[in-house]
Amino acid sequence: MLTTLVIVFIIAYAAIALEHPLNINKSASALIGAGLLWTIYALSIGDHHMVSEQLGESLMGTAQIVFFLMGAMTIVEVVDAHNGFDVITSRIKTAKLPTLMWLVGFVTFFLSAMLDNLTTTIVMISLVRKLLADHDDRLFFAGIIVIAANAGGAWSPIGDVTTTMLWIGGQITTLAIIKGVLLPSLVSLLVPLGMTAYALRGRDVVTPPSADSEHANHTTAFERNLMFFMGLGILVAVPAFKTVTHLPPFMGILFGLGILWLAGDLVHRHKEDESKQHLTLVHALSRIDMSSLVFFTGILLAVATLEHTHILASLAQWLDQSVGRQDLIVMIIGLVSAVVDNVPLVAASMGMYSLTQYPADHFLWEFLAYCAGTGGSILIIGSAAGVAAMGMEKIHFFWYVRKISGLALVGYFAGAGTYLLQYQLFH
Image (cartoon, one colour):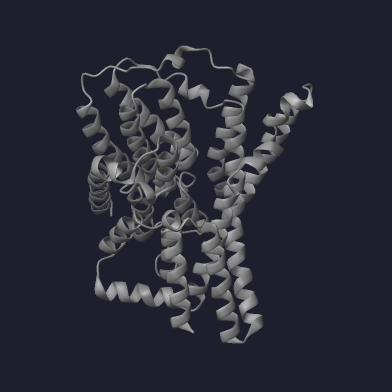
């Protein structure tokens, strides 16, 4: 049975990694993999009561992550529908290309920590399109945006799916991950950002003709500001809600979503249905990326079978015996996340190492959050932010390898070195 489970998981994993060449959505691969793995496990064990209990336990953990992501995605969609991100992006103005690069890099880094790396990438690339006429310049900016978004997501419990998974799973706590990973993440951005800005020195910003035209907003300044600051406030308040109430994060995000929904209905209550339809929470719910939520459900349930059969624990023992050093093992996981999706990698790592042996905020979990979050920047297919940038700016895989991968790799190792040094100094 164990051999069959491993073979099925590897095939499903390969199908997820080769989503674009195969032209098969990774959500389909994840769901089929989960269905096959649980079916094989249930038929092989024969103890239906035990299997049902284990499935229920796995589903509860998976549902907490999915509900949290659903709430966060909906809040972001509402803010975007009200043009709320204009509150930040409209203030980014400069005549020098290197200065603009620094501004975009830092705004992306901190915005990603408060929203998520995928949304931030889409917002910032949309902004850069309005500011830059030259497509080659926009490609370099898109590359830096991917690096900055992934780096920003790594040190915040709500900034990246993998960090959120570790946070909800109890492997990390809010203040510890911020204190431990903020500086390494910043270094992993500063190195490539500094090198790129230096290469662009002396050049001026050339804006496209449409950049000066008046943007047609369907919302008032009050509505934009209200929804932006309420949405951002709710997202930032969720970690505090968890700390004070000890309730799971999904409860905080759903509570906040209800408050935002009420505020939206009150603000738009006197408008005609047709003019306010695209601003409602109902419309926002129809726009969230359900395919990604289905993928997370499938892959987390698939990994759960390997956890219940102790395959992951055996893999952890083998890695400890073969590689020996935890820091090298985690750095290898980070490098592998540039090739395959970091969600199943982190899910597998959570199953490989128990909280009993490695308690919350252990070196392993913090370094994993950094490596899995920033390692995806090394290749453009290694993160959701990279795939979004690839689609929006038509970035070729090999162009990214030639121009950006080296910068991301240097930043990755610089940040990893910073974390290890910092850990040695303070522990």
